[in-house]
Length: 73
Image (cartoon, rainbow, N blue to C red; front, top):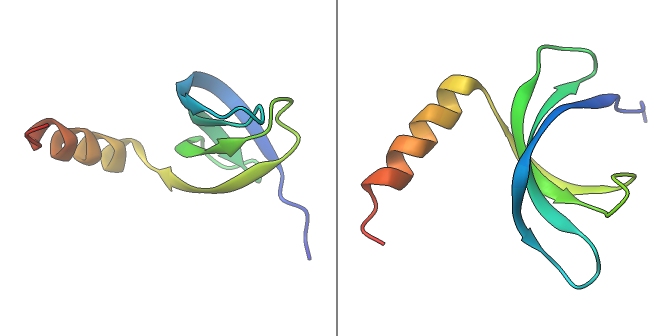
């Protein structure tokens, strides 16, 4: 299996943090030296391990924002 290269270009913020030290974060990440995308996933405290997540382009993030803004919470 090929190693996945990633670079956290910008940390936007944490959505939640678990007692274990892991946190669900929104970041701008370059995967395999490609154009950075917005990424929401769980990270260990030292960022050496990651959980499954979702990666979004700017356009997809804007569409998600509009969907969330339309919810009656």
